[in-house]
Length: 212
Image (cartoon, rainbow, N blue to C red):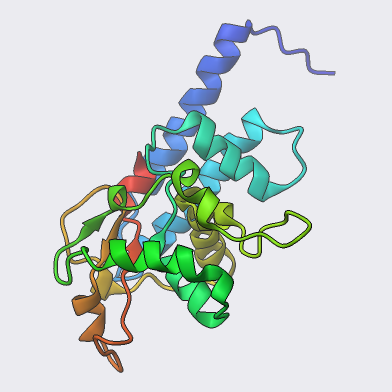
């Protein structure tokens, strides 16, 4: 039976060296227009692997992923709430209970640029808007504000590209930015079947962000 006599420091060095080799291998991939999708899939898998190393005792992948992002990644926007996503969710289930929340959302989105990329810092932090989300009599949220945090939306993006191979729209990759950003409404409006009245700002995760 193999006996690992390495010290803890050596085990950690070997582990991080292995993770670095994997990341370098992913970064070196070349290919056609879909290579960014393939790189994103592999980088999300690498995040899964890292989260497993920290939260291996946690059985649910999503919980591990979100905990790792919130507690071990240098991402100040992870607990911000996406206002466009809140708007779309409430629009699908109109209810007067959402009036105060929607007033807040409309007032903020009205100040967003229609043609320039919008940084995620325009979204509010969870703890500043939680009180606007209505609750039922049993104190459960009608819509859970945590589901609209950027950490959770990143998890959804991971699932979309990893499990469903949904391609990242080339039209979104228009700005030379490393951090995630919203593609403004006017850009989405000129895409096929788009119009400014129905368009909304969409989140784009540059490959450089996942590499970080």
